[in-house]
Length: 231
Image 1 (cartoon, one colour):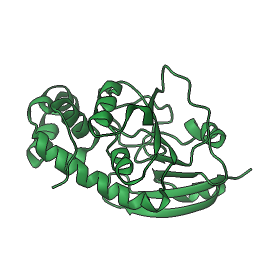
Image 2 (spheres, helix red, strand yellow; image 1 turned 90 degrees about the horizontal axis):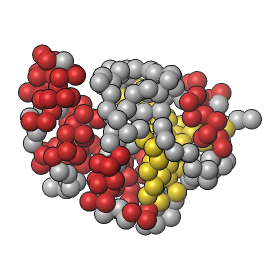
Image 3 (tube, one colour; image 1 turned 180 degrees about the vertical axis):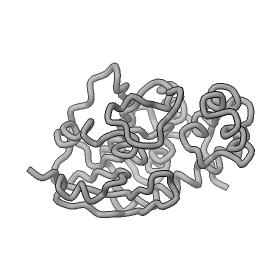
Image 4 (tube, helix red, strand yellow; image 1 turned 135 degrees about the vertical axis):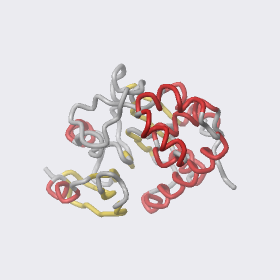
């Protein structure tokens, strides 16, 4: 069975980022003690690293299937809120010459709100662990760049593809990145993200396609692929 290379720290971070990786026991513990205690204490000890590695790979492979028609070799891809980068590892394994830029925040919030935040004040990542994961899973260091949203300037270059699954316009408002994305995209750049208001973006982009419908999340969402900002 295919899986990622994860150490214990990475497995814990993946679990905190992707609640669907939690076992029934972990879900009961989280419900009983609350998300804060689960994140700080119990998630450190109730871990099956191998199972999380296999299950995380399955989830990321399914995510890859939803966007693979927009992928090609030698692309420059911008990933916003990518977690530990499982999707990007699978892309790297299947598409030669891909370059990745990650925009992330380097802390774990005490509590994540599963809804809309127009200030982008939340995060669930550690950038040293993200780099460790990418290198351990065979993405060359020369093929990726990690940008700390709070400390570094955002890169000023064009991208072929932008991905932000369950992050941009799902946890925080699209407007935070709207002007920046307009600046780093051209008429052929594809921007893929999940949203609870897909029709809203038909007034922003020339082309909007729904590529996935998710009725199982707390806030029912659609994954859309958008191209060409309207003037």
